[in-house]
Image (cartoon, rainbow, N blue to C red; front, side, top):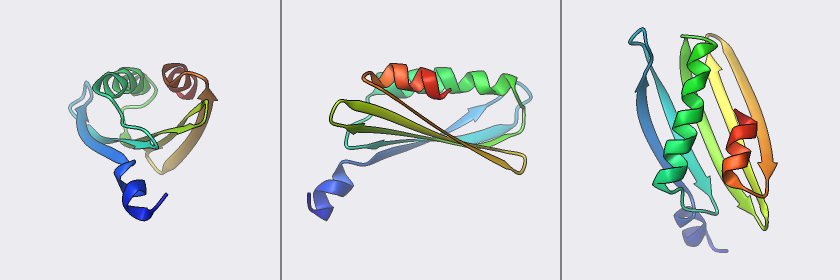
Length: 102
């Protein structure tokens, strides 16, 4: 795969989400080797919003969705306070992978 096609395979989106105490954090959703659909974005955002229950000091969340043959992988990087948590989950279904990561 040449560089031009590889860059076209990667999509990203920045969203400002607001938590209950009006502090905002940034959510970035990136797709590798797939186009992230609106339904996938909304599903990921719905699941990510549950992280607000854990801490109100979320700074940044990066969701990376990747497909390798039949393996659907989700990498989740969550930053809050001075802590960075990385999680990886995979299955044969992207929505199931999102559930496992969160």
